[in-house]
Image (cartoon, rainbow, N blue to C red; front, side, top):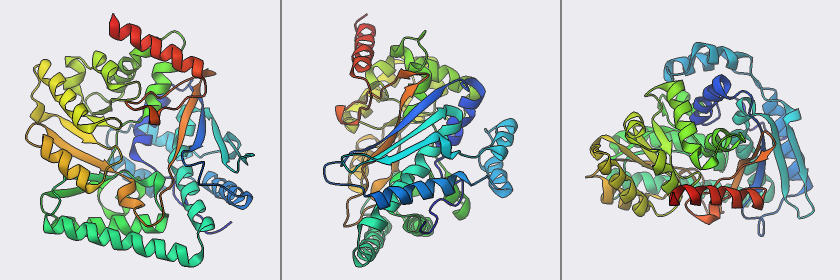
Length: 406
């Protein structure tokens, strides 16, 4: 094995811990299958050596445990996490027998993770980080890799200079890039650069990172709330439930767990329009805001503002968080469109952590099965959809269509 990539179980996104507590307390019976997908399979291949390195890195990840100082940090930084949940984390560790890893006949990585959702949820982000870094280190020659590192730092410095000069006005923005980072080393350097430069930005505020380990290291805010997996698991993984009401079941569980804490909801797992059917006045008041992750951001923003206004809610008190394939130009434009009508914030991933002369790893690791049943992500654009079973997609779409029409 080359140098170990994941050296701390805090090297993960905050929303994993938020979801993990809710799953432990309310849905410990949810058994899931995660499946890896390389969205650039036609042009980006894997070798047997890469797959063996990924296996070794995953084994090393599975040997990790939470340290006392890490759990103490979680208690302090995330007071909504309960005492019993922190105690659970003190004995938690990932297990290698959850994984199936191989090279398929098309020179693609076949990787699944199977087991209880409240245990396997912590594997997604670190494993994707391992895959990304391993591919770059083993595919690029030494000189090419060094050149990519230098270009990544150069572009970072140029962005910081423009933010300092006020050429972009982003308001509040955070890093959301752990899973697609170029490497752990470059990720660390970039977050440090943004943290140090933040005080000099004009009308832009680097408020934190989704990566809990780096938030702890640099004394910045860990950010994040919820992901698609939660909506798929709770809303679609139980046969007695109509999946067109997925968001209702998740919001109910979230309020039961956290009350008014952790209040940013992801709208697009089965489409924003059907989400709005369940986003009634109570939910709209309890959640601090909503997150955009697919589809046209301007149409989505207008739709959300119109919905809040229809409920008699002051939109200036609610946050529109945008997180779909953003760069700073796009974020500047979106903020200009909505800053006088609502709170606006951005979660920006690839553009911060993997913007170099080599394309980032366009990869996902998604829940595809819950309790033996297929589940699906049906975003506001077809390209982000993922499901193993076309028949289930048809069923889910028909369920949503019936609800929307009746």
